[in-house]
Amino acid sequence: MPPRPAAERARDLVVLLHGLGRTRRSMRVAQRRVERAGYRAVSLGYPSRTQTIETIAGDLAAQLPDPGAGRLHFLAHSLGGIVVRVIARDHRPARLGRVVMLGPPNQGSVLAGRLRHWRVDRALMGPAGRQLVSDPDGIHATLGPVDFETGVIAGSWPLGLLPWLDGPNDGLVAVRETEVEGMTDHVVMRENHGLILLSRPVVREALHFFDHGRFGALSSSSSTSGSESGKSMRIGRRRRDSGSGLAGSVRSITRNPPAPAGTNA
Image (cartoon, rainbow, N blue to C red; front, side):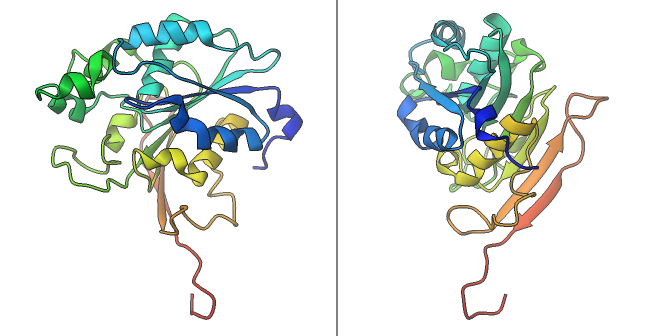
C-alpha cells in the first residue's frame, strides 16, 4: 500500500516517548525520520527513574500538544508504551490516533522481576521500573486490553545472554512479553532492544501503521533488502483475531541482503 500523501500526513502529529533510563534525545533519530516523512513530530521527556508510571502519565498528559484538526499518534519505546496505555486509560486525548510500541513489556518483564531482588534495583529501575514486573503486582495486571489502534514491534536480536529470558527476545524483553490483548498488529524484527530506535526499517513500519493501521512496509516494498547492518532480517506477524484478543499463528518472512556485485546471488 502506498504512503499517504504528505499533505495528509502533515495534518497528524506524532508524539515520541523514550524508555526507562533514557531521555528524549534517544528518540531524535526516529523523530527526524518521522518528520522527513511528512508528519509533525515532538519528543517528550520524563523522569523515568524517580516517579511512578501513573505520575509520569499524568504529567505527560498535561504536556501533550494539540494536534489541531488531525490525530495524535504515539511512537513509544519500551516503558514509553506502558505510559501511553496509562495515558489512554486515565487521561485519554480527545483525538487519539494510532500507537506504535517498540519492545514494550506489555505482559510485564521477567528481567524487571529479577532485578527487583538486586541491590542496584533502586538505581537501575526506580519506582516505574519496579512496576514492570511480570507477577500480579505489576502494572500490566491493572491495565486490561488496549482499546485503541495498537501496533507492536518486538525485537529478536538479543546481543547477549540472559538465561532467564525464554524464547526469542531483544536482550531485555521477550517477544511474548510484548503482546497485549486487543492489539491490531504485531511484528517481530531482527532488532536489539536498545538499537531498535536507530533502525530505519522499524520507522518505515511505524509510518506504515500510522498511514494504514497495519504493518507491511517491508513486505510490500521490493527496494527493502534488510536491516541497516546489512544482515538478514526475520519478520513474524500477528494480527488481531476478531474472536480473541491475541492472534494465533505467526507468519515469518526472511529477507536477505543483495549479493555484492560480481558474485552469484
